[in-house]
Amino acid sequence: MKKLKSILGLLLLMQLLFLSQSCKKDKTLGLIEGTVTDAQSGSALSDVRIIVFDVNTNAPAGITVLTNASGKYSIEIRDGNYYLKLYKQGYNGIPPASMSAIPVEVIAKETTVSNYSMTATGQINDGFISGRVTEGSEGRGGVLVVASSGQIGFSSVSDANGNYYIYNIPIGTYSVKGWKSGYNSATQSATVNANTETSNVNLTVTAGASGSVTGQITFLATTNIEVDVALVHPITKEVIPGLNGMTSSFNYTISNVPNGTFIARASFENDGKVVDPDWLVKNGEPLVMVASNSQSVDFSCTGTVTLNSPTNTVDTKPVISAAAATFSWTAYPSASDYVIEVMDVNGRLIWGGFDYSGGTPIKNIIIPSSQTSIQFNSDGNAPYAMLPGHVYRWRVYASKDAVQSPTGWNLISVSEDLKGLIEIQN
Image (cartoon, rainbow, N blue to C red; front, side):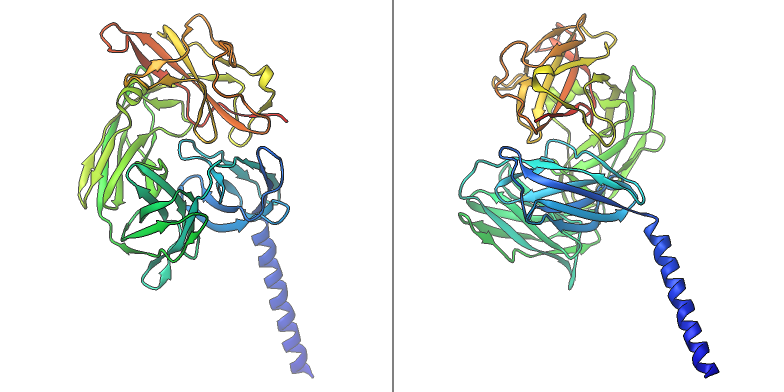
C-alpha cells in the first residue's frame, strides 16, 4: 500500500511539473485572429491559405492555416513580429510582389486582430500548380517556388511539410524552380490547363549552395547607419528566404547563395534611409548573377522624405475616407519639386507616379517645393478610384532640377517603402 501511494505521489508530482511547464510555455504565446473577405462584396472567403513569416528572417515560421467557412482564421504563436502571406485561387495574393507585408506584432497572452480583403483577379480559366519540395525523402519548408515563362512569374512558399500551391496561373507551359538560402533546386516543367490543378510538380533541392554577394554602402548627404540588404527574385520581386542580413561597418556579405540571377536591394526596412531613387527609376534595380562564385554590388543611400499624415505605424494603418484623403509630408532640403504616387495592394498605379510609355520616365504630377500637401486626385486624372475597404500605399519623391539630365531632373530622395499605408473606410 505504501508503495502504491509512492507511485501515485510520483505520478501526481510529474503531472504538476507538466502543468507547470505548460503554463510557462503558454506565457510566451499570443494569438493572431481575423477574417478574410472579398474586397468588393464583403463576403467571407473560405480556404484561403495563410503562411506565417518571421519579420527578422523573412522565413516561414512553420505555421500554415486555412480560413474556415466564415472566412475566419486563428494562429497561436510565440510573441514577436510576423507577417502573413495569403493565397487563394481566383484572388490576388496578399501582399503583391511589388509591396511589403504589413507586420503583425504578437504580444504574449493577447490577441492581435488582423483582417484582410482580397481582390478578385478578374481572370477566367486560370489553373494552378501544386507539389512538394523535398531534400532526400524529407519535405523542405520555407522554399520560394516560382513558376515562370519568360518575364512572367507566379509564386508561393512551401509549408513545413514541403507542400506548395501556386494559384492563378494562365494557360501555358512553365518552368518551376525552388529558391532558398543554402540550396540549389532542380527545375520541373509544368503545363497549366484551364480551371485545372496541375498536381505532383515535385521539386528536389540539394544542400551546398556556395555563392556569395558582397558590397559596401555609401551615404549621400546623410548620416551613416547599418542597413538591411537582401536578394530578391528578379520576376516576382520576393525576397529569397534566408538571403538577407544587415551590414557591418557599412559592408555586407550574403552567403549560401544558390545559382541564379537576383535583384539586390538595400535599406528596404523603415530606418530613415533609402537607396538613391534616381538610379532606380532611370536604370532599374541592380541584377547580380551567381554561379557558385562571389559577386559584388555597392549601394548609395540617402535620407528619406518623411511622411506626416496619413501613414501607418509598425502594426497599424489609419482608416480614412477617400474624400478626405489629403497627403502631407515634411519639406526635403534642396528639393525643387515633388512627385506623389498612390498604388493599390496589387501594385497598380492609382494616381500620380511616372509614365514609362515613352521609355524615359515622365512625372505625371509635379508639386512645387513650396507645397508639402496635396488632396487625392486634385488634378482629376486618377485612372482609378480608391475603393472602400481597400488598402493603398502613397509615396513622395523629392526631385531637383538638373539640366544635364535627359529628363531635366534628378530624384534626390523618396519616402520609405513600408510607410504611407492606408485603408479606405467602408
